[in-house]
Image 1 (cartoon, rainbow, N blue to C red):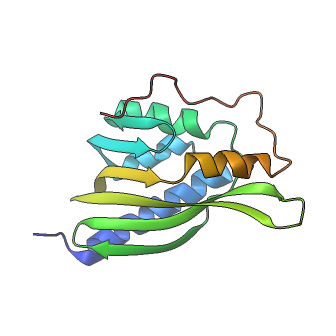
Image 2 (image 1 turned 90 degrees about the vertical axis):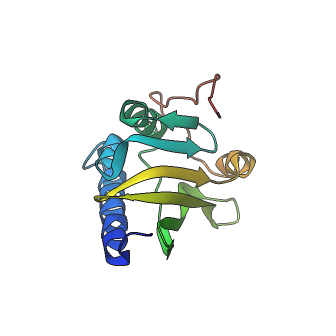
Length: 155
């Protein structure tokens, strides 16, 4: 049986609040660990699979290093039982040559585990589209940017 919808919505709101604080640079990205179980699984389209809070902390801080000028707007959410869907984008700084803003759309699927925590998140977006999008802007990676590991785990 699914958890109470209001409880899930409150956890989504807390997740988004933490994410906004991380985007603003007020907290490290690993601060999102607050809303994940100790054994949570996080799968990212570029960075692979990460299980457990220690791996989650390392992934979040590493993967977001160098992206301080990016924004990650949230557009909508949907709740179906304990399943949560979040629609967002990678919004890169600058514009295309013809003056358009640069977005790479994404969708997150999360599973709510109770007690204000998610046990699973999978971020889905096109890695190839993101690469093309990044080439369309004047944005340059910072010297501290961390590349994804070559030995990404998908199992």
